[in-house]
Amino acid sequence: QVQLVESGGGLVQAGGSLRLSCAASGRTVSTYAMGWFRQTPGKEREFVAVISWSGRSIRYADSVKGRFTISRDNAKNTVYLQMNSLKPEDTAAYYCAADRDSVPLSVLNTAYDYWGQGTQVTVSS
Image 1 (cartoon, one colour):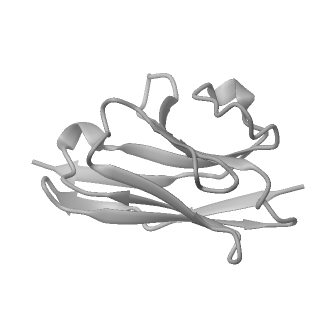
Image 2: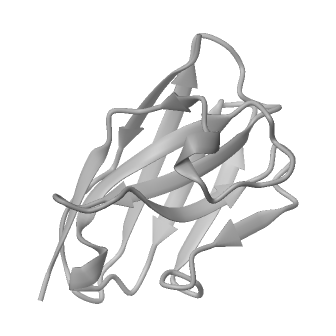
């Protein structure tokens, strides 16, 4: 089993930055693809970004391209999401997820095997 714990959320003004972290425990996720999703009340969970086990392949949602950066440190069993130029529409609960079948990279939440509890990001205008 893999446990994922997100941290780094909070309240920030529009245009500001936050860095989310996702620490994995239970077993190494160094061979897993790791993704970030977000969700607001009453809406479907939305893909944000995914990174391959090696870090060489990355995909982003169009809505965050050029503003968000996903990265990972396999030695620390941790994945990051650097969020810059934040907008009020980025307000959501952000979830980290692990996909054992790391190829191909998936944008579908149904492809992921393990999920964290989420961390809230609120962007004020």
